[in-house]
Image (cartoon, rainbow, N blue to C red; front, side):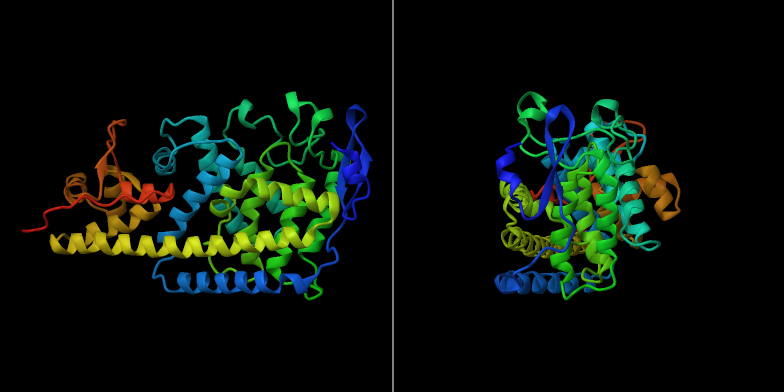
Length: 396
């Protein structure tokens, strides 16, 4: 780590660590802020969040769009950390815990589960170290040792970690976060800040930017810090009543500007460049809200198209129930449909056959017993691809 770049930092201090190196410990929040330079990006971000909240309120069943948005976030946030899978493999893993999928897909599925755990815990306790550790434990559960199971799931680091560095040597690191001895106290102080009574006029969306920088700079876990940090952004905004439903995810916006994302946080540590970082964060929030609003419109249009096709074929109401379930689980099977509808296997098969005829479902050729069926248009949307439904003869 370039010590000269950090020695005079107004946002933290250097402390000695392993191998004769130094680590950076961020100062407690909040820093001095220049709100005059943040007026416009703050106003745009709040307007975009307001529009996203309104879009969420207009939905009869928000889960129909929340689950596809979460799958897309899981794919992109994980890929930013070097963990890759496909939307169809992820959909299969979510549909069936026992499905044979690779370790990367299990890890991405864990991202979705970890978010849902955080959302559930938020109803019982504030955003806290307990919640954060539980999210981390869920994220790294049931993965192989080489993928993080040996990285103390649910516990803060007990060895010095670092970011960057040729040949994985701390001497070549671009950044060295606080050592373990400083981590517990830094995270305890962050928890106190997040749940303080006196907000000192700092908007929650700005606090989210401060919190995200602080968490990523502390880098409290041996692995999974980036993914946990991005999960906590919408969780915090929901705690503060800024976000009404879990519809905001930053990874789709950040993915294309990952270098800026990393460099601007580093500039805060080196130079105290808070304004540039917060303005960028607000810009990403605005872009993410608009992207989510667009995706909501696409999903609603897709659902309307499905329902119209079903109506024109004079199919039973149970087929409509299956369609709505596909937005939460775009991979399904005849036994799952039978259980969903409370009908016999033949009746469920008849409903699935109808959806195949309509081009809404396709059989997956890679699975057997039970046969698996996939809704490609919904899955493609999780990867940001548009797939037009095939034209189907709907005459009767």
